[in-house]
Image 1 (cartoon, rainbow, N blue to C red):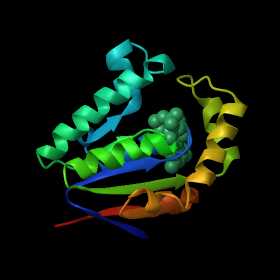
Image 2 (cartoon, protein in one colour; image 1 turned 180 degrees about the horizontal axis):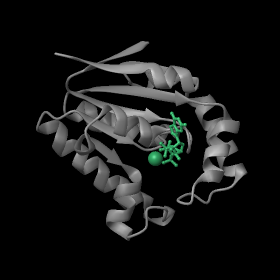
Image 3 (cartoon, rainbow, N blue to C red; image 1 turned 60 degrees about the horizontal axis):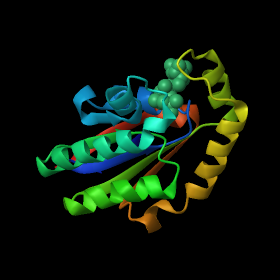
Amino acid sequence: MTTLDIPELALVALVGVSGSGKSTFAARHFAPSQVLASDAFRAMVADDENDQSASADAFGALHHVAGVRLRRGRLTVVDATNLQPHARAGLVAVAREHDVLPVAIVLDVPEALAWERTEARTDRTHGRQVLARMQRDLRRSSGQLAREGFRRVHVLRGVEEIDAARIRLEK
Ligand code: GTP
Ligand code: MG
């Protein structure tokens, strides 16, 4: 079993390609109200969770709510791919503004598995190339996270490690 130690008050960024299991992981380990999902914010601002043109507004709203929660002392988990340095920089900035530790949990599954899962889904329509690009972004990201300001970086490699992980909140 892998135990992920997380401060009781943290901004937790999940990092992983589409189909890596971020939303599944978030639902398993955190309360629904603790999880801010980019999909949900796209739906909130555009009535369509896949509307990429709504991303800027959706992330603006997500950052705002994350900031409000952190100000109120609430653990906050960001369920988005978080594969781009600029996306992660936004989260580190929100955490710092509120004197809260930014933590990253990376879900690293084989690309073939993520694709298999994507093909089985009806809520995702992106192609193989998009997934391949995400996987490249993930490769580039690993090793950068600590440098970007994430104070703890937990990397879970493969389905077994992801399945066996538990979260321990530090008082
Ligand atoms: P995006 O929201 O597209 O970025 O994907 P995601 O990383 O949130 O993946 P999600 O949790 O939605 O999982 C994608 C698919 O894989 C879903 O159909 C899940 O049911 C399945 N899945 C996720 N985690 C697991 C797992 O641990 N075991 C199995 N068997 N299926 C999983
Ligand atoms: Mg998801």
